[in-house]
Length: 557
Image 1 (cartoon, rainbow, N blue to C red):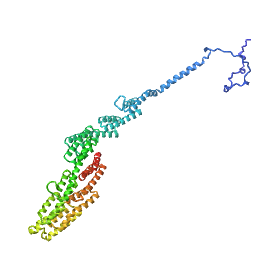
Image 2: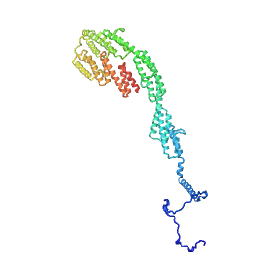
Image 3: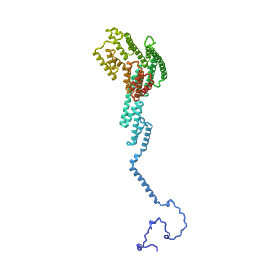
Image 4: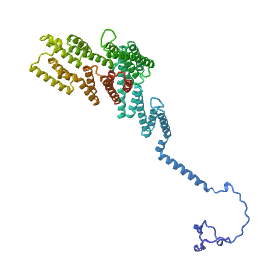
């Protein structure tokens, strides 16, 4: 037998199909009872070569690699726009970083590495880049700040250039308009300052050193707007030297008060002037010497007055001593009061001469008194008596020499005198003591005495006017009516030039004006403060507080 089966005898039903078994439990460990028994032979190492490996794995690896290549190429093809955008992003970030650094360093524009150029380069790479757009806006704002700083420093050309850069970046706006307005004002102020400097130099050349149009005031206006202006500073130094020279000249001429005023002015405008200490010492020494001399004249004048040496030839009389004081110090209140006392003494002597029947002697004495106190109430009353005697002389010469009263007046004259006295009394109550002319109490009483020279009511009313002036002065001063108080003080000085209350009134009024000057300076009303201080200098020029208030006014304005 060959062992081959006959195909015709093959029964398909007897065929056993191969099976794989339970694939679900392929990984489970085999159960021992399912395995047939076998005998293990010793293992022998089997040498395997590359040729012996199954070549079926290489086609699969090649297929996977091809799929990766094809898939990567497809992804690149479909995402090429995104890749194209990502390629320059590193360069853009570098440009933005350089721009930010330039902005932080203050290199705003005008150079290749400036912030503006760098941000614009970034926009060239990415026209919609928000960081670059915001950066250019920050550059514009920085240019505006630079323009402001340049205006403050007076560098108007730099300010103009920075403003134009800002305008180009920001495209205008409220801030740009405000800076441009400030720049235009600064430019106009520069023209004004040049004009002021020309005016100040002209005033200095003409020797005009005082007032608002004087060289110091004009130079100070320039420095108020431009503190670093070298021309104005040099001009102030020259003005200070001119004021110092003026003060020295005033000292040599004996004008000590004028020298003090010049010194105060110099100290106010140039407190660091090198010659100021020596000038202060010279003025102070001159004032001490002058005060000692004035005190000597005043003491001698008072002694001559008590001794009855009112007037006379030479210096051995009260009149000469008081006049010597006024030559050095025209506003000296004590000397003026002394002259008033001399006038009052002459009027007393004139009345005594009238009582003794010596009208010619009385007339001479009254003329002398009239030169010293022309508005004295006592002088007016004494002259009315003299006129009454002169009017009675033609009808009764003996009576005129003995001072007998004039003939009786008519009823109409008496009524007119009474009416004048009533009007004068009413005017005195209103405070119209010497003004207005013709309707004042002084003039109305004198009109009554011109008709009836011996009228007791008119003479009493006239001589009571000084008392009324003192009372009204006190009320005006207490109420802060300083101008009115000044008028009343001057009225009293005319009505009773030797009045003992005058010096104290003058001091009180000067102190009130000084307080007002200080208050006005504190309020910034410097022009009004200066006018108030002028009143202080007129009334109490020796007040040591004048310099302090004057300096406060000078520094404030």
